[in-house]
Amino acid sequence: MEILKIENLSKIYGKGETAVKALDNVSFTVQKGEFVAIIGPSGSGKSTLLHLLGGVDRPTSGKVFIDNTDIYDLDETQLAIFRRRQIGLIYQFYNLIPVLTVEENITLPILLDGQKVDQNHYSQVVDTLGLEERMGHLPNQLSGGQQQRVSIGRALINNPAIILADEPTGNLDSENSKEIIDLLKLFNKTYNQTLIMITHDERIALQADRIITIKDGQIAKDEVVRP
Ligand code: ADP
Ligand code: ADP
Image (cartoon, rainbow, N blue to C red):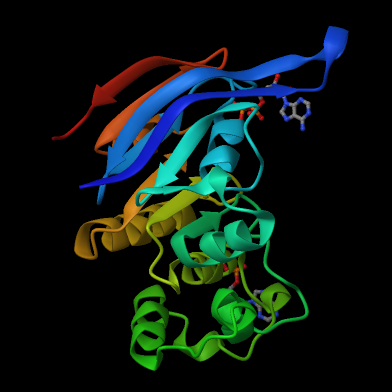
């Protein structure tokens, strides 16, 4: 089943002489449960692509369909709701809210939506992440690896259609990196959670099902690593 389709996606920052074409007519599809690594040189357009897939920024032209919804056809309010329910974002520097506890950070996408937390799903996510003992802590009381696990919890809490991760291990040592990648792979393989991840680390990219290489805002290569 096709979970993501992007069509002729372009993004130009700025106008006139100083305009930068960050993404140039990119199209591809992703099947539900796929683990896709996005690689490429610095400045090639990887983060721009991920932001457009995540509904964080609007494209200059082109379309993004997530689970058959044309996300840029939604107005700002609808898009914010769609994002909280269907897109899980994981960043290099965690982006946790410092004054909220671990539990509050993880359940934030549900609380902002005015919904009730599904306790079974919540417990399952928290147990898998090994955060049971940390629910009342604030982010700055946790190690980097633990903070990234909290951000994975927040990304997964709504059972989103896709998880988008931008260099999720970029700020971690090798031991914590391995732990974070193993957790993301566990959710990908066990729960068929679609995962799209930017990485600079070739060893991590080689663990994906598919590697897309971006160069100068275009797809330079799209290789299946394991079918
Ligand atoms: P990558 O993630 O591969 O390093 P980016 O998507 O961050 O690449 O950037 C692609 C190009 O777009 C670069 O030339 C970058 O300088 C430019 N760019 C990114 N964000 C902005 C912005 N907000 N305003 C202007 N130019 C930007
Ligand atoms: P890691 O090797 O996983 O990065 P650290 O060496 O940073 O872990 O931390 C070891 C333990 O100390 C962790 O369980 C972490 O939760 C705890 N810890 C780290 N910093 C703080 C802090 N500022 N307050 C309370 N506990 C902390």
